Length: 140
Length: 180
Image (cartoon, rainbow over the protein chains, first blue to last red):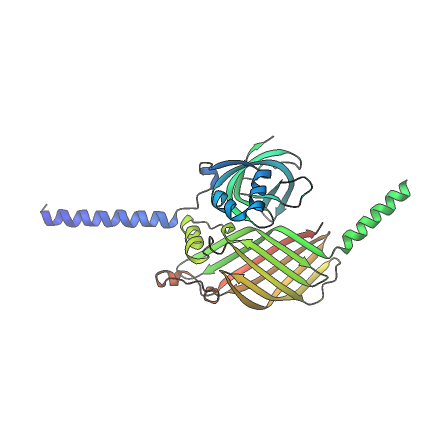
């Protein structure tokens, strides 16, 4: 094989690897929060309190982070195929930590009053602190 | 004693039936872009919705980061380049209902008009066809409308212009309970 052919072959191989990598990255499924290492562990009360006290600071601490949140179940709601669990944040208060379970993570649902730990991605605060793509990791 | 209990329960039931405001913290908002090159779909299962039948008003608010895409790259591009979720974390809609919706079981076809704020830009949205169903104390709201990214100053790079529809179809499903 001549030197020229070797260079062409190496170039073609590199192009093929680059195209394959690009194709893989483009089609890569969304990374589930359950597969990612937990960034922080926090109670529902503390998480809600920090967002209500200083939203901007809480955003920088928690948003886009994978959290393990422990709290008491205040409500379990099913809308279509989506299951959301509201963790209570304050006695008698309206707000809480609203956790939407990832598709397929809704096996055994907790009951109101149970203390559970949920792992998921924190996305910010609306009426409640929002956790999405969640899985229940400890259902006592 | 039984009579008192019956009266109290009847009053509570009556008040529940008279509830005019319905809310949901888990409304579903999804959007769909269809082009010959690519279909893009995302779903947000945590929109907050409030429907007040007395005032005939409707309000929605959601976090942009709650939109879940099937592909990681789509999700990253949406938050970083298009919605700019860090700069504009929330989108909201405030509107009014046209059409009669008595607060009793039934299916009511109405129209909704109002202001949609997205990517820091507020635009008037007119006559969205919607359906409100009241059954077993719940109000289910369904609506569909189209959004043009350009109207909200969302710039699509020419490299991916053929992969993103010029009009994005938005669908809403909210199962609301009487406000406590």
